[in-house]
Length: 498
Image (cartoon, rainbow, N blue to C red):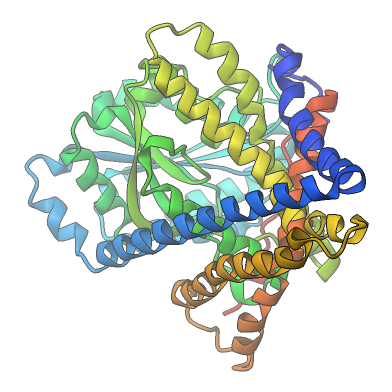
């Protein structure tokens, strides 16, 4: 629990609505199954039909996105960006907030930047430590300065003070402090704001070697580039071979969700490690320091600041990150649950949007309705769909008394067909997961491939335990005013099998 609740509690009605909707759907499905099972069966058939069509829609977008991803990977973007006049004016700022991460993790972050096919004299790296971890961070800072000073245009280190009024401990408040300090440094260097692109990365992020060249190319060729954020494909693959099966499924599921989103810019938010214009960050006053979901909120801040004239441009190149891990199998599952709950805490954007949309009359009404609908619908189905499909969908067939009616006799066959059709999406994800896997480490046995294949049988269980339940948990906490603090995903260098 954070010491400060920040912006939470300012709109209790809209904090209650998402959780109330989820619990209403779940309770109503049970009540209908007990009182009017025939009506419940009709509801389940309609819902499964909707879900089957949604899965088909999802798969089509994932395949289209993957095709663009493969095409983008095949291009030498360093050569292409050098063909653009004035490419050398673009500076990349990489912001790496850190809290108690081990030195090898920090070193790998810098080493990956040195491997990039881009001019290192146009790269500015900023590490942001926390005062709560000051001694450890200072030790790492000294070593990193000795080993990497002079290898980039600039290498900065900041320490975020603790217990600042109006803040909650977390990545957003640290990023805001980092950017505030950095602004003074940029002003002293005299670099034009419009020439700077910022990549806010988790410290375990390893960008593709062509990432910064591709990003610079887009920034130089996109119309009005300072009115767009830039979203890569996030792969949780740094330690995927050593991760547990449920963790791997959740990791690939997140990647496939992102692939399906980045080809639909009309509904896209930024997610996790991504890039954005420094001009936009200055205009919005940097990250809000009093919330958990800073990676997506920064996009909404820009959308509001520019009255809807802001978008997300897909990069279609990967950044790889660590999956959650722990010392034991149980600790890994607990870490996965906490991570999924933190991501589901993105429900906090709903009361924020409702309040802010009222204050921005120039923001198109259709834009407001679209973002509210997609967020409501996404949060509702995230929390309720797995239960309706895999558990509650069978309840009315148990409670109905007239087992000879045409509806009861024919419904199982109909539902089985729709579920099998929807399951086809699982095979597509399974096949694509092998194409997104990094090479098998030499220390990993060849038979691990079999585990990688069989793990998809756990999808329904993982869908419920590490999808629906943490989403219900997050929305219920918001509904009850039990606000969630920022939970740092621990990184372990030892989990990256060589």
